[in-house]
Image 1 (cartoon, rainbow, N blue to C red):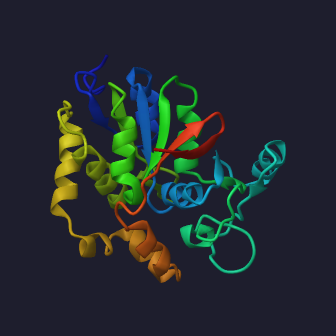
Image 2 (cartoon, rainbow, N blue to C red):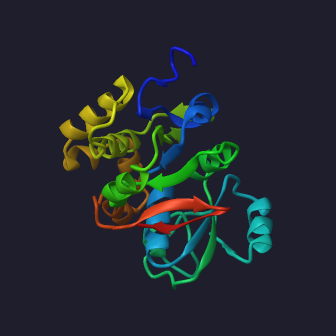
Length: 240
């Protein structure tokens, strides 16, 4: 245990890959939050009966991984029109039940791959399923919530406000559990930021500028799903 491990508390919050590297070994449950858009895609797809395989690289390796798992591979370029699926949640709203899809993502998928090296249960969460995720995670003693963040052009972590707020929303749904200072801070941000303010954050502005305002709206819907998303073997599926 180090000064930064938050190990004295049931519910912990820490950012990105360093959270997996330094805190995951002491967790029973890891919740990865990548609101715009990996975690929202996982929620939308699995709610419809899809099976989502995370993969960290957007190249030919993802397509090979899909072939090895009898799955399709999402297009690397985000769009919600035309055939096939992408990292746009709107592109997944009509996914047929039983679809097996590899979803390459440098944030949420990459963190899931890192987390798989540990023994903890792994969940993906977003605004759509905060209450369902909290309910599914209550059985675990030590819960590590990981806001994924995004990447700056130099590949360094860009803390993403929407991920922090969703992490705080999840923290707020745990009652009678000890919370680290970091978890309480995330909860305070959630409790004091309006939906309109969140729609004006950097990630939302970027997607809107690129023509994906409908994705922003979908990503910020709160508690519209009754299903948590758990990694089972190589893929995310729904659990109640």
